[in-house]
Image (tube, rainbow, N blue to C red; front, side, top):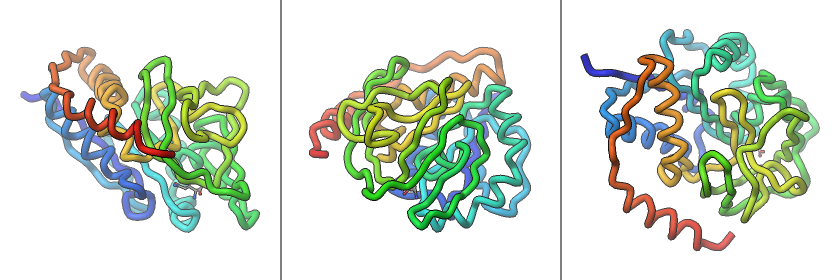
Length: 239
Ligand code: GLN
């Protein structure tokens, strides 16, 4: 029987801006190119949390979207911690990156509690950090994306960032680092969509999930010349 992966898209109704759905589409396509069958399951507030999830993808959202999903997110907190601690790969962008941390204090001074899976805290700043962003990551090389957030995120002492900022802001206006990683969980401010332009991350998520499930993964050779052109073009765009 063909090997298969199930991807859970977290809160697509409220947390899905600047093309974040493209992450799920790219992941599905790429996993299929590696010879895996893929099922995508949407999870919205109030749904029952499905079993046998191999990868979790979550996007960004307005503060108002974050308000809509926050109670449900806290209700599934233990499940998400358990999955993360079992090595399930996850990619959380912007609004959900913030809420996988301890809290997000919004522009109006209201605090939205997060699930504390990542040791990060976020406080809205006076300016929005907007524009194309390029970072250098030890693990994935150069990562190219787009950011748009008011939140200024600070990493706890033992949190590893995803990378060092080359162009743009990243977690905050001060530290010069972007994103956070814990086990197989990546949090990042990078929209774009991120995965279509950064297949090294896509392949990593697929590999982690396939090894968790089948103990082995044999990648296919994929022709990435169009992706390389897209990366070259995206990198040349002004901030
Ligand atoms: N509302 C959050 C902020 O402005 C997240 C924004 C986003 O997901 N793009 O910081």
